[in-house]
Length: 208
Image 1 (tube, one colour):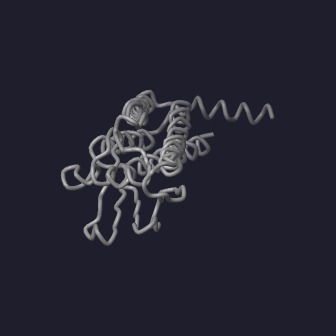
Image 2: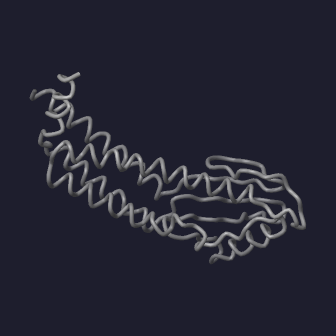
């Protein structure tokens, strides 16, 4: 046990080579699309909506298709089944998500500049915790919207869970949900951080 702890401590204190630093810098750049591109998209089709109703979810807002008219149309439909209106102000995630992404980006740069394995491990653990928490928060919000229905609504429907990925039939609507560029960019950052960790470990093993 003591020998294992000493081994871990030696790795954490080891300097990073150029390659892991470059990967961290690239991971930092991958965070930029999260500020300008959608993270997620939901598109709903029905006989009366042949072209579909589109909802894009950014890190800081909701944006509907047709100059945001689709959000208004979705909220009209939600009113009939007793679902809360979809409004940006109700999503607390939009208040902290851009801020946390920015902090993580600065920590990526800090690890790249200071160049110690301990900084890389710290930011990797933080980033993967943030990713899991953000995914859980999004799923829980979707669950709430589909289950907290007004019992006095004009149209009664069973509580439901909108799809997080792929296709689902909800009443007479066909709903498709898929990640968009912002989420793929955040995923690419995670892959780069994992590669940086693997390279740092291999470098330390080779030199040790």
